Image (cartoon, rainbow, N blue to C red; front, top):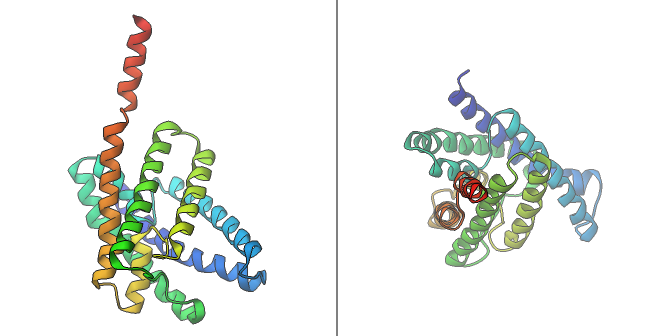
Length: 238
């Protein structure tokens, strides 16, 4: 299987697994372990979430970039050439969306009591601003981690997981705090409101615009490593 086709298949499978993992973590915490919806129960759920993030980071590593989140593959594509962007927008992101939709469909068939996914609990513009700000923060963080500690898998995954969890908690009461358009699309498709103005603006347009702004801001404020290393070497030689 070719590299491009392999990534598409990996994105589909990992996105399918991701929506299942969130539900299974909740079921394991509150039904298997019989935890209450209190501080202790939330601490257990958050700990399992971080372990889950490590597992999916490992899957991304062994699949050479397979991902469950369109935003994760979008910002490298923006920084790359046009062919990479077209491949990401035209093949990888649709594979992630289809994987999420398929996963949610089987979740609802297996566990009909799990609920209907994230919901917008505030005004549409406040929701869009919330998703945009949270996305901007996580993309800036991801770009910074990739630049400053490119080889440290455990440390980078730990920082990324805790940061994402924190941002999701901050946005959970407002928009659901998923920070993942594909997963939200899976639940919205199951409810039949995936083409509404609220869904498109809050969970797609706002995060995508925030991702574009974050990439542009990072490029503007942070010098490339090659340029920085070159100046350092020249300074030492002088």
